[in-house]
Image (cartoon, rainbow, N blue to C red; front, side, top):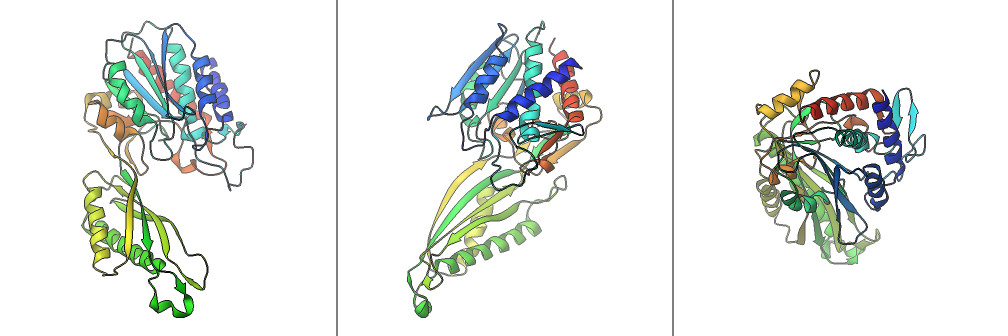
Length: 378
């Protein structure tokens, strides 16, 4: 039980670092470097251009063989405006749960992985164990893209990659991709008493929202259906809209942000083309600018691969599942011809919410799994 107690201690330390995406994660990175100061552990630090954030790549064991790569992100979502019962950046243990921002998403997994990495460094490994820690996952899987370009020169392609996002220790082999867009509509200003004489940018945005709704209905009816997901089809969602300065002024600008989350068999480009076609049919004549803000690919791993079966054997109580939320797994799949899966402690149901928590039983389950996993590397 000392091993699992150490996971709790490390998790308390990780939660104490406010690594909200708009802040630096370097204090946490420094802590990890100090914690893993071991002659058998190699650490590569990868800074962003501003030098205020960093990815960390950690490895132990032989360098010339294919091992296991674990991965997680260090950033968390904001707590601003949320009603927490406790300080979100102070771990609180109550009723066999650990409360704190990032406890489930995903510092619980990172704590287990760090303790396991330290333990593995004293073992006679035949195959290596790697751990990748990234920044800015929560704002579009930003940081990991840079470190992924370097991994081919640092390691032999791994035999399996495990992204430790919260799945309640189920094995997820698929998730949807995501694309984020912002569209800006330009009208002409004028006094609202003469409103029909001017082009109202909010009216244009409203027409575009209607085209999004129509496209969603088409995708739900005619797009690919995958019943493994909670929502079995690709989705289109408007999350933000802003326009106008005063009620008596016809607005000359309106912006809206929307996203497309696609099942693997549906093309984001095709869905986007359908949206624009629906809007063009309205013949609005408004000038607009469309910006691609961010995209990351979905994950689609064949669950019949031997490596996936081997992981399942280490988790006899787990299910094979598909995730509605996105992860960095699809980006890893673009860089490695290796089986990629998502499996980690905690529930996504409590992530991003006030009073986020992880059950200690989940930390124990993750620790036991990593023990068994490392045993396969001996």
